[in-house]
Length: 298
Image 1: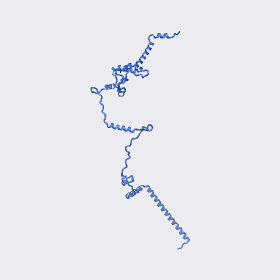
Image 2: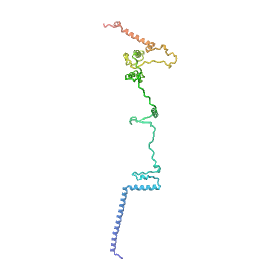
Image 3: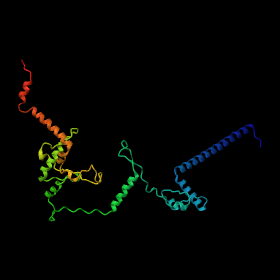
Image 4: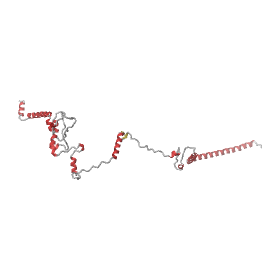
């Protein structure tokens, strides 16, 4: 069938719109498919549960096939919290060891009360162990017996007045239980104490502090006191040495010893003569003699 040029042009014109319509339809189909794929991907991203389901299925398949060492408790898969344990099933089932390190050794440093002052203090571990061992021994030892209450000769408990009198008899353990002398012995002890107080007059090269009760008589004596005496022993003068005094030459009291001492007697005699000479110069009849020695005013 022969076509004219006009018909050929019409045929071309008619064929071009069909091709354009086909191309437009294909473009629209591709747009629809791309938009649908994008919407599916967005929906998959928005719903992560699908990925979890896929992961669970893969894990089940691998666990059944035994291709992987991964062990998953199927009972825990359906729980809210997903747990995946790696390694041998027997090792996974075993519990973790406790994190408690146990009893640690003592430190050589102890923390101080504050960070600025004494932040660290050194400790003596040997002494601390000894003290702790002693405390344990004391805890295990029997308790000491309860001291009985003091009672009198008749067996009755002492009154407050009697207890006070007993306490005042001595100065206490801190003062070696110094006794309180009886009132009958005070005059005799006063003479001994006065001799001790006047020891600064016996030796001119020694000076002593003044006693509190000096010059007050018997009332100036302390409440608790005792006068000691040197007891002869085997040391340092063992045997019959020339330096040891025989018993016959030993004196009873301090005053007797001072009177018998030759050096003390010489010093006392010299001081006595000095005092007597001063009294003679200032005595009776000396004023007229002094007036004679004065020069007249005219």
